Image 1: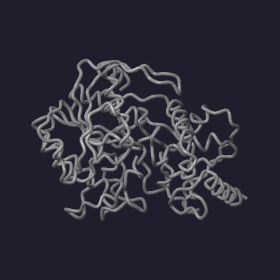
Image 2: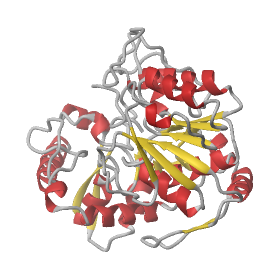
Image 3: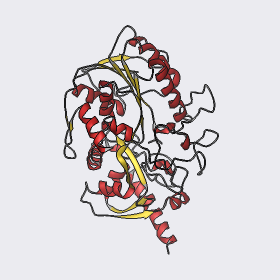
Image 4: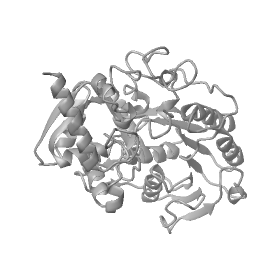
Length: 404
């Protein structure tokens, strides 16, 4: 299975860092947040800006009082943000629209190929003060086997006890010069990080390594599956065990923190997962259950049994089986990030906003849930929630039969 973004995912210090970087008032779920103005308006360049994370970055930067320029190919959601400057080009050798201009900071959330990131970083290093690169928690070596492919069974390198920190070894690209993002997503992100540091030095850039990014606008449905399915009610297959760890980060929290990091010219490398200390699967499911009054009942099914039923593990984030090769992959340490001002909104807010966003989508889109329990024979691919619930019922029946 290709390691793509679709697959990856101190309290006092955190509080003081959040205050230093600007106060955000937490609303009730479903309500808009109040965003305070930045200490100083900046000229912000966003490489991307119209996909999933990008729009949240643009909105937050505008709310903070910054002027925003976005650079992309002009193909994805070109109708967004008519009020901002839009530069059209391509990171693959068509950066001319960026020449002869200057900005205070750059937010790069669209870099996957080291050559592309190197070209943009080298072009901009003398006309910008600070560069933020959105990497991935998929850079760590423990995801991969000795050949550099995704693990298919438990083995070395092991996930560290106590959680993965930013100092944990990263993976090495096994085929130097390859630009196959589908095969080497995490490997190439490591080299993208290196390209940014080479251009800007350690003191003028910041690298974020998010885990599973969730919330309104997510096209992968990796978290969306949970509030949508729970809102349907009935008997619900709960993956794994109640105390299995899980982590995620709301795209809006990642976006706002990214902007604030640039405002403060923070440098370094940070795991971007939430909440601080992580969650257990029972906390995740019952927390989402709290947003709906639909009658439900959870039935827990071990990861080993799900594997026997042909359920692809990576179709069920933010959970990973503690019996499988990725036990420990949902235990990233984010102490540094929270000390540097990362904040996380309540689970209920993320869940209800995601559900409301999903329900606002066209019916055709809602018939193509991209994650969860696939329909029919559980082949990897989009399926309607009705089809997924049929598969769910089959697995639950098999589990009960196995229990006698």
